Length: 165
Image (cartoon, rainbow, N blue to C red; front, side, top):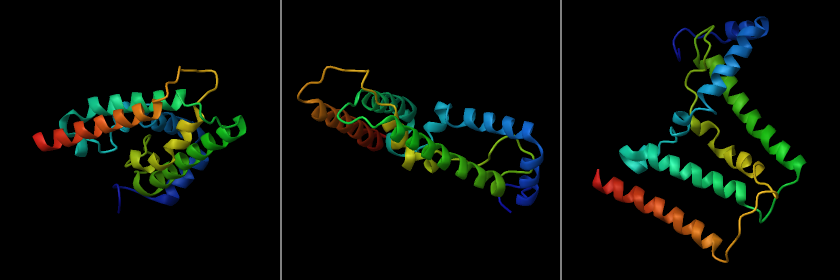
């Protein structure tokens, strides 16, 4: 038995008969995952960036967010962005339900065992959806090279930290 007192049929019965519990479960799960910085750092960057992974991960996430928002080489149509967001949320929802039914104790207000790696492959869809033509950054000729250089710096920091720890 995974996760202790689990029973999928009892979980399904609870989900179908108790909508207040469902709303509470959804709010708790979303705040503990998507809106929780510690959850995003569970991408196991500590294996690469050692003890200071939280700080390096924060810089990487800010950089990734900046590039995602300001990227205007190609902006998807609103319909495509909505489809990408729905796809991300569908993957998030399906993996959450699977873990709630198979890994979480009956009646729990939280989904046990949910890891960042479950949504990481579809994260680019969410990042593509946040770019906007309205946000402009003056682009130099070397923008792509600068992005590559910063990525390389993060890689060098990770290698140096692995060697020093």
